[in-house]
Length: 88
Image (cartoon, rainbow, N blue to C red):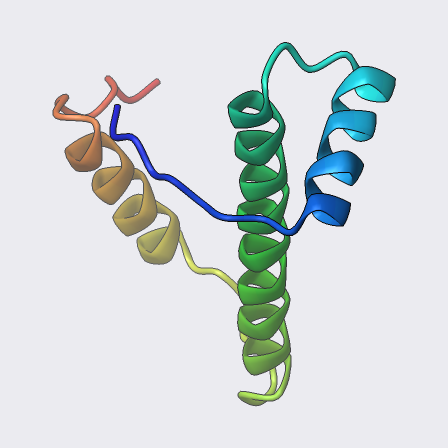
């Protein structure tokens, strides 16, 4: 873990300390990490919504074929470093 020092005006420091007490954080670092995680989640949600919007605007949907499903399954197995599942 890397250390990062920040400077805050007294008013902000008081705010952080109050929030720490209210929300049960043991340290300012824990509180700031929580804020950053929330910002990361928010950004990921925005990126996902953008991708959904792009997909919706990309044209009419087409039905999935057996070949499409087989290709999707193959890529999932490859991504996880395993061979394909036996066919039933």
